[in-house]
View 1: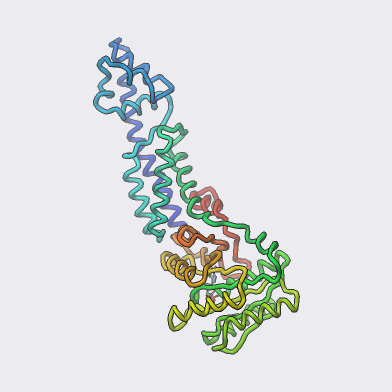
View 2: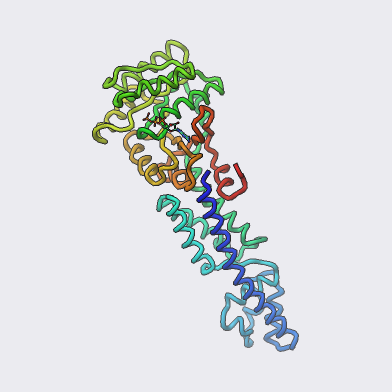
Amino acid sequence: MFDGLKDKLNDFRKDVEETTEKDSDAAADASDATATDAATGTPAADDAADAAATVDATSGPAEESDTDASAADESDPSTFQRAKAFATGRVIIEEEDLEDPLWNLEMALLESDVEMSVAEEILDTVRETMLGETRKQVETTGELVEEALHDALLDVIAVGQFDFEERIAEADKPVTIVFTGVNGVGKTTSIAKLSEWLADRGYSSVLANGDTYRAGANEQIREHADRLDRKLISHEQGGDPAAVIYDGLEYAKANDVDVVLGDTAGRLHTSDDLMSQLEKIDRVVDPDLTLFVDEAVAGQDAVTRAEEFNEAAEIDGTILTKADADSSGGAAISIAYVTGKPILFLGTGQGYDDIERFDPERLVDRLLGADET
Ligand SMILES: Nc1nc2c(ncn2[C@@H]2O[C@H](COP(=O)(O)OP(=O)(O)OP(=O)(O)O)[C@@H](O)[C@H]2O)c(=O)[nH]1
């Protein structure tokens, strides 16, 4: 899962390590040079050697000295700063160290279908974390990069998260959940999976097929309902989707069913038709939650659709299917930031159990290699 993106993030770590290693070598040379001068006993060299040994790299005596400073100090203050830091076991990351690696990272994120504003946000956070507390002490550059990437990714991925199970537990029953999204992305399968997920936690559910537009939609969802032994409410093709979901709600009330899972059409003649249909469902059944479903493999297209559907009928969260087949990870990283609504579940296969609660920390660990699953 998301292996392509994982590799690219790892490349960034290597990139920064390489640039800072070169600079560390230069700093080591400069540090050696000041030490050698110190051995010869020149006053300026004494200052520099003191500076190299001092723990506070920002206020060493060399900076205050008005005698002729060391060659490194005069020609390249940053090299001298590095030399001082190097002598005290510190790593200094300068803006120019990050320039090329950050450029490469931006290209890699965009290639991975990460939305532009999301990529920029990630770069800003990485830059801030790595340079923010300038001359921050770290054990290795790799660790600093990892920390910066961790924070940057988590910031965008965790937008809007809430405890879905708690929300279901606390809501008045029946809870109505409406699913939006285009056809073929795994919407019906996700409804079936969620019905099982809820059953595993003790909640009963009824399925309602609000996709009255597409021929064959009733048969498709009925197959799932039969297999799972769930009640399905459906009307004839061409019927009013709001009426179907309303009937689902009435059935749930009459039979003490906890949750109504309402499918909707993924595409109509025009987007205006789709919008007014979703608006009508909103008005008639006033769903507790509207979940947008799309496939991770659709990348940028999924992100754009999430925005469009969110405008048509405000969503409360996203289910991202086919994460098992997605290498890029762009949609998983971008959708929450772009819509302001969290990803709630990942579809991870074709079986009914192949659904997992979206866990931002776990995804970040996966991307940074700490979680191998
Ligand atoms: N690998 C994988 N396949 C999935 C996942 N979710 C759904 N699928 C498959 O994707 C295909 C389409 O799923 P459907 O549930 O029929 O798609 P849909 O969006 O409901 O399509 P419509 O009913 O046309 O709206 C099916 O073959 C599913 O088995 C997933 O998380 N991983």
